[in-house]
Image 1 (spheres, rainbow, N blue to C red):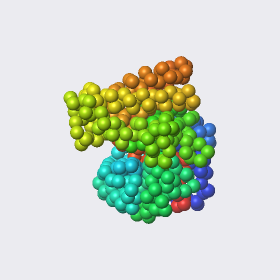
Image 2 (cartoon, helix red, strand yellow; image 1 turned 90 degrees about the vertical axis):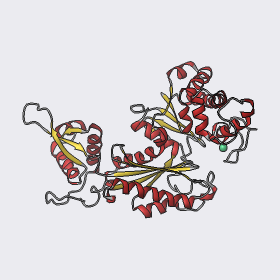
Image 3 (cartoon, rainbow, N blue to C red; image 1 turned 180 degrees about the vertical axis):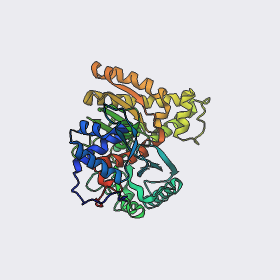
Image 4 (cartoon, rainbow, N blue to C red; image 1 turned 60 degrees about the vertical axis):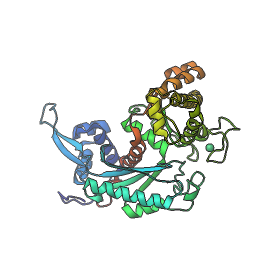
Length: 409
Ligand SMILES: [Zn+2]
């Protein structure tokens, strides 16, 4: 991948300098060598060497000239967002989706399919590879520029053995090395992370939480999960299980949950419960658009947005349960923002307004007043986008993941 514009004795790469130069140029978009030196506190010659290496690797390009401070106008260095691509995979419970993004979060291709991911891991693995390949074909670029594949899973992730963590929630996945298969088929490293954590990553990089260091992202879909961002970092807890708020027991005698316990939050606000509830109540709402039992969760959200009384009752009940749990979370963590994502976020203000009321009634005044509760704007692509961004974050921490920066120098 090196373009070899000059012959040089291979110097030992100062990984720290490379990393800080890379991150700075990625963030500032156009910056002179002098400013990089100033901002990193390194000598101009050290910076010149690092910039030359990253120009050689094809990650930087010279991008016009800046304002002069007396002498020659300095040449500006820019980050090439097209120097690599990243795949992000969202393995939901009943669907999967794939995004191909450039190095600045722009979508290059997108695919989604319904699939019984929980019960058919082998088929899901094959479908993931197929959709990833379709995205790469649509993009028409050099597949060697693929940095990696981020995979979002709806379960906690043990960083030491990401393939095994699905056992409890996804029994059919036991022993199935689906992630190895993706790696082997696409020839790029695979990074696995919990879906709610990745929703939080997407919000922090591209969404509602840009510039916010302390917030909680709540994904409310088939299940419920929380991505907790503290000081700009995902909080994983001692063994990676932090944020499994969907299995917080809110009624010990409540319905049985997928995890084997009873009365978890998911059994009250998860998509399946909302559907069951709407079907049970529909006899009392003959005027509702949710007649019969042939509707899905999106139909409930659409009906709520249209002011349908049955749908509003369902969303209100969910808001009541969620608000109670969020109030507890605010008192516990005092985040600056709570961002609601997942499919239920489509209900927008119909969900947020009653939820804010419940939260206000249940929180200590200071933490409630200071917390901003809103829905995500990233829509159904949030998790896949977060999965791809997770790989970008890793590469900006470890530039060797970029094509052309590795051992060839
Ligand atoms: Zn549970």
